[in-house]
Picture (cartoon, rainbow over the protein chains, first blue to last red):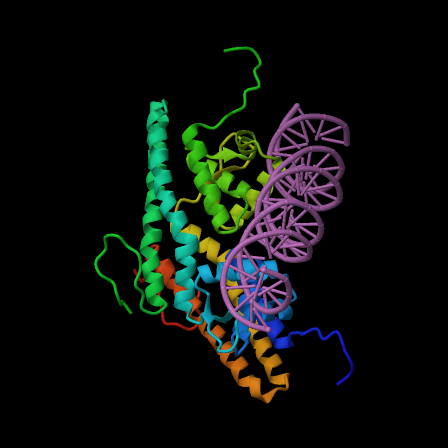
Length: 181
Length: 181
DNA sequence: CATTTTGTTCAAGTTTTTTTGAACAAAGTT
DNA sequence: AACTTTGTTCAAAAAAACTTGAACAAAATG
């Protein structure tokens, strides 16, 4: 082979395109490009990849990879894979759509939903304190609309998970739903 | 009342809080703050509001309101409301959760899903062109995973709409599903 | 048809988010 | 213990997204 060439460990055409799909998907759900790239490359690659391999093949900074993997771990979108003989952490992508979606919902969606409930209670208090006898009715009306939206969203989650393949899911009061589908 | 005071048409406490809920919701689905504010104020207010009233009460620029309303119209999240005697357009919020979600999916989600299909076909071609007999198998495997995710996402949509209240929804080949729930 | 009213457009300014890279910590080696 | 490897943190730089406001168009009015 020719002498010391710069040896950019370039990605093949299909890898680039497939990673692009994940970059778009990430952006769609509000995650930065670098996270799409990392998950995308792991998705393309047969073997587990180490931190360094991600940095080199994607040509992005260590900082981005470190933070990106942190988020992906939190979401349950990557798994640590032990490689004998190597001291480095190796990563593999989570391939179960159900688990990916579940992780995303639990991490990014549910918190907003829950904090939302408290916010609505606060708003109700504010409406009561407020004078304006006349407009109070409308305000409370809209508040109820909001509450009904919340409730429906919550009911939707377990159904989504079920359709995605047999889910156990958060729901304080409803009857058991270990394995619906 | 006191002489010409600056008269900031300030929002009441409960309005501010409720608008805040919409600002957060907007951000959650990747829409800018100003759009959350506009929809939020319309949601709080009993009467339809004009362009100018939105500018004044929210204290944001005409540009933001114009662009914000454009997006909200596109999403079907606001409706024009004719007010006799006034030449201005007046707006009211769409209050049906089903229609709101449907508008969002149709406008922001479906396009990505569809363009996605073509992208995957392109990737398949690239994988075939590519040499490397050995790795082709894995690549095609992952491509199939992606296709299955797509398919499941598409199946999910009508179900989501149905749960939200009896939907007619896009689906080329499946059997009739005018009113499921 | 000149003028006013109403709303849109878009380049420039501002703010927010993301990325970088150098300094740092933690743990393993020699 | 000194050194190396591996990965994290975080302030500063870069990029992206959002907002502003002045110039512009379109339509109604007088």
